[in-house]
Amino acid sequence: MRICLIGTGRMGRRHILAAKNVGFEIAGIYDPSPDAITLALDEQNLPRSIVFSSAEQMLTTVKPDAIVVSSTAPSHGEYVCLAADVGVKYILCEKPMAVSIAECDRMMEACKRAGAILAINHQMRFLEQYTAVKELADSAAFGGLRSMTVCASNFGLSMNGSHYFEAFRFLTGEEILSVSFWADAAVLPNPRGPEYTDRSGQLRAVTPSGVRLYGELSADQGHGIQVIYGCRYGQILVDELSGFMRIMHRQEQYRDLPTTRYGMPAVEVIRQIEPVDVVGPTESLWKAMLKGGSIPDGQCGRHAVATLVAANLSGEQDGRAVQIDAGLPVARVFPWA
Ligand SMILES: NC(=O)c1ccc[n+]([C@@H]2O[C@H](COP(=O)([O-])OP(=O)(O)OC[C@H]3O[C@@H](n4cnc5c(N)ncnc54)[C@H](O)[C@@H]3O)[C@@H](O)[C@H]2O)c1
Image 1 (cartoon, rainbow, N blue to C red):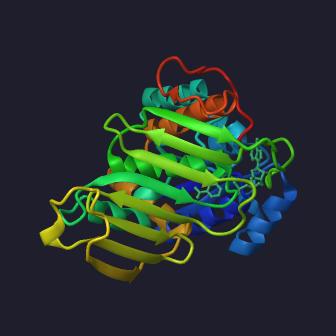
Image 2: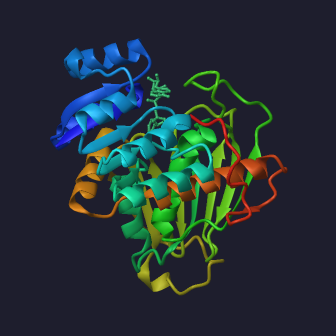
């Protein structure tokens, strides 16, 4: 199958690698930056003949089976709609899906109209750091997930926060109901360019059944990402960057004691899992999409964007909880990358 890529920056180059590993023929690339093109060709040993001077020219000339949209967020909507309109069957778009909720809706409508399959590259369901946790948390020994606490560095609400909204949705099987965000006063320079802004701060989100997501992504923290999952009978700690995992739960004979008895003898296991990677899980996503399996679809991407919109609104109102519902400003555009 033949694939084209739009946006060949840092992530785009990883997409080329993932697409090659899946067995795609790289049939066209487009990026307005000559430097980004040259770097991608050199790094991936590709011929200059696959470079096009516009996305439209590339798609109408090559007529690929599949496309990756890995430009920055403001152009995701335009390219996904274009690809669907010209008949591309498989569309993988980077996160955040778009810069407004209305744009997400337009993308989903265009794909539905054309019969295209759209996935958003929130690869969480293909990462052991979440699949292993889901299996443990749902087991009798742990008794179900109650909270997820992400103690991170200044990794950006839209840049990485959007991944955690999808991770939380995947782990709980529920969409987030409401979110509170206490934004740091300072808005720090964005590594992808001065035209983009992201926020740091502290976050709390809740599902309809009352499961909580907490996020510490403040601008004065600068190292690591550790996540603690609180379950009815135990806790799971995952150091996402190293793959260290500490699993701890009540011994079976203590399970039915009240939660006020939190210091009983425990079963404790230390495990090493796969640390964070983007190429492997992106390959898994492609394989799932081509086989008709479970993928993070447009609705997953839209929910992450709607949660981002609500969190930004909350940040403008001193952390007031904002519902993720039809009352959100769908047309408001945010300067995410
Ligand atoms: N899923 C993940 O794990 C993951 C990881 C990193 C980045 N991302 C996402 O991937 C996207 C790209 O991130 P990056 O780190 O590669 O950024 P980057 O700045 O390294 O690259 C972005 C590229 O897009 C190009 N571009 C900008 N506007 C364009 C347009 N209108 N048309 C075509 N190309 C355009 C730029 O020239 C640049 O080469 C972002 O949306 C980012 O959030 C996802």
